Each structure stands twice: as C-alpha cells, then as structure tokens.
Image (cartoon, rainbow, N blue to C red; front, side, top):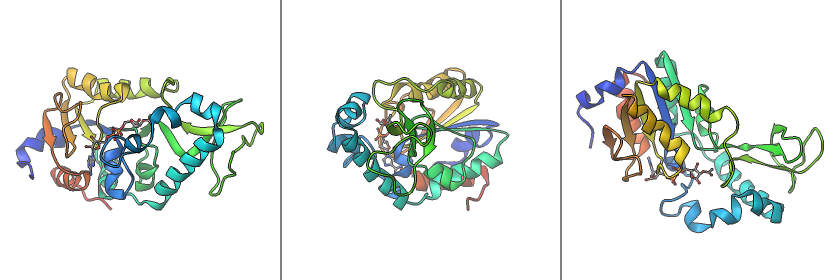
Length: 245
Ligand code: OAD
C-alpha cells in the first residue's frame, strides 16, 4: 500500500543517503535472486559453485556457470528502480550506493557513486598476478590474464573469502555519517553489507526497507515498504520530487 507522504519525509529530506541493494532490485529485470523461490542457492549448492575450492577442483564448471549467469545479466535491462536510484545520486549532496549485486544493472542505469561489494560478473581476475580485467563478449572456456597469461577467475567475492581492501572501509565511512538509509531488495543474510544499515541506524540514520517479504533487516528499519522495488521506488521518486529517465 502506498505510504502516507509524511512517513517518507525523513527520507526525502536526507542530505547524505546510503542506498544498499541486493538481488531483489534486479528481480523485476528477470534476474533470479539467491534465496527466494527459484533462487540460485535453492537450485544449486553455493559451496559447490561459489568457493575458491570449487574453482580449484573444476575451473571449467565454475566458468560455465558464471558464463550462464552473465548471459542472463547481459540479456536483462535496468528497470525503473535502478533508474530512480541513479537519479537520486544527482539529486543529493551526499550519496553512496553500496550494492551486493554483480549484474552491472546499476552501472548501466547510470549510477557512478557506487561500490560493488561483491564484484562484477563482467570482470575477471588473474589467479597469479591479481590483475582485474573486463571479459570480452565471447570469452574462451578458461579465460587467461592478458598480462601474464595465467588462469583467470571471475572477479566475484566467493564464500569464505575476505572483502577486497578498502571496499568495506569506504562503505562504512559513508554509512557512519549517513542521515538516511534506503535498503532495497536484500535478505540481509550476508553480514558485512547488512551491518552497514545496522551501524548507520545506530548512529541515528532513518532507515527505509523496500522488500515484499520480511528480511533479517526488517526489525531494524523505521519504515518497511512491503512491495516490489519498481513500485516502491516510484513512490520514493515522487517523495524526492525527481523524475527518472
Ligand atoms: P537474496 O536472494 O538473499 O535476497 C533477495 C531479497 O529480495 C529477498 O529478501 C526478497 O524478498 C527480495 N525481493 C524479491 N523480489 C523483490 C522485488 N521485486 N523487489 C524488492 N525486493 C525483492 O539476495 P541478496 O540479499 O542480494 O553474495 O543476497 C546477498 C548475497 O548473498 C549476494 O550478493 C550473494 C549471495 O550469496 C555473493 O555471491 C558473495
């Protein structure tokens, strides 16, 4: 149900807004989530596909799986929720988008003040020299580093791995001084990104969640918009008086 405009006022008067997104923001673009019905981790065992050990055992299989996912992402288009988030960036003096998504749809919608916490499905990283590079449109079965020709892996954060240096620090630095947080389409199941919202809230930020379901963050937030990202971000655009392209 559309919220009373006054309930969105603390969000719409924010000067420093942190937006935290998860797979749900891309659900209406046709990209499967991880934990929902038909979600990737329902159909596949995460530890068999998204760990360094799995890659070591069978790099071809892992690349094949990521190429399949990449083809879904490349065939999808940013939806109006991605576009409203990109428009918010230009409308506010302080803005950061911290996304757990690797699908590249925020970037394609025009977001630039963005931290991709879990990497990008269009990038690969050398297993020897760590060089990160953009994958060609049709990569070989086992992509190689263009610098040293060693085996490359998807530039994605896998289970059991640490976040890349600086990524969480920069996100937390912004979260600590945010006056509002907008959480869109995440289950909050992964600790460090979820704590961004928890910490910001502890420092007094007004927190709004967009999610048709209850999430691990629902208890923390001030306002829960229990609908899909496209509809809710339409309401939010209206509250900010912005138009998305
Ligand atoms: P999840 O699949 O855990 O959660 C997706 C959330 O989106 C759920 O809470 C859904 O209710 C919600 N949702 C579904 N449709 C929606 C819609 N139309 N609008 C808004 N919300 C909707 O995905 P994430 O929270 O992104 O990490 O998962 C976090 C991380 O866990 C991922 O980045 C991935 C995964 O393992 C790595 O791969 C490192």
